[in-house]
Length: 316
Image (cartoon, rainbow, N blue to C red; front, top):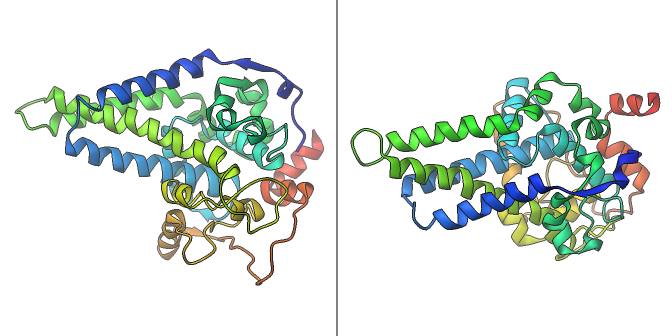
């Protein structure tokens, strides 16, 4: 994968800084004053819907790596959930992730751990590369996603989607309150927990996969980067913490290879497979031999690009 010329341009993104700061301030301040158990349950539901269903299952294993195929209604639903996580639309999220795999732990990696934990965890979002800060530019890293009109709609309307769903959550909370009519305390508690606290938790769960699993943990597979299996990230990130396994065989839909490597997303995949909603699942190649070192060229071409993308790459 060849980087765009704009990859060398890095600017501080005030929009990202102000948004993330505001979300954290609202969540960490108001969560103490507006707590109800129904709002907490709404938080858990939204956390899994956006984090596991949307990001892990949808953006990552399905769309970024094509670890399996899904019927279109399911594919489009999980892409909507991923967009609702407010980590970027499908084009920007998947394009950036494919660049990460093509240059993992190299200077070209968007969240290269060698630049420090802060950079790999959150700093890369503030100090933004131009090739990842423009839909037109990042589309070159995921042409298969960028030419889909539905994904382009999600990309261009990510903020509007947050507002609409946020208002629906506020309305639901108001009518589920304990007082007759519309309960504003309940409405605000739903908004604080199911929107703002959920965003903060979802952000850091994803960011720990970028940072912690490239710093702490074990390396049973000899990969061309510093990816690691980290048990506690595996628990909080729906199975994404078995990151060294993932970097060894990126297309494998199953990240927890051993019986004790708990992978919640793999359980979801198996359940949906039983309902015939997903198919053509890519499994790890376990032949009882250590995973050999994978060349960067092979990893880029086999794991990240589809046949249509390779054709597009040659044409460009």
